[in-house]
Length: 320
Image (cartoon, rainbow, N blue to C red; front, side):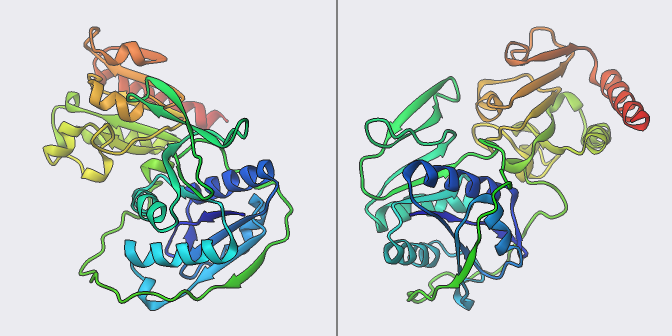
């Protein structure tokens, strides 16, 4: 059985979780087995997972699990995986998924691969693909253990909700150890598509010159329906919150469109964004390294180019 860990926020299943469910159901079909999902907490949309090929949804409810605790979540998922005979566990490559990947690997004596971006290959065993060397190469990694754990990169494949599988919902009650972590405060970002899930991203760097100028970046993002991001120097300077920092030391993303404005394109930044399907660079420095990685480039002053681009997109949309 393939078991997919479903992430949600305030009872709403995340887009990345539907991607994981799609991956799990496709992998299960290849392995000639069933795909099941596990949800910790209350989710009204659990039945929707049948549209993504999930046959059974196991719901775990416990006050001890109201806040994320790596030890308790690992114990709950590992108990379910053992009892149901899961031989592949699929997580999202999120902060939660990355926290669970190693601990589940230990608990289940399973081989683990993070940041997977291909469906498994079953030729001569079981192997998956992932980017290595900051996205400059693709590795094929074999997992030889009976149980396998992977984390799936965001936007690695599109959610496929075309299945008509009948889904049953079952409760599961694990034996949990005593909680050792006390959550004092929890801060969540609401109202925007999280960067790992975003298909359109507008990002800016020090070329914006001053945080008061960020309005033109937000206006472009708004007209596109995109999520905003920034380079590390911008986040470190306090111009933008750290959850918007993309790059090797920030969040790695792979949107359909990444617009980089006033960012030079240092290797550390490129490492986190070079898997974007289309990269557009706007920079007045024609020697900026980012132009070598771009699909499209505009050499010009961002304070002239960006407002004109925003106006042109707004005009195009109004005509549609």
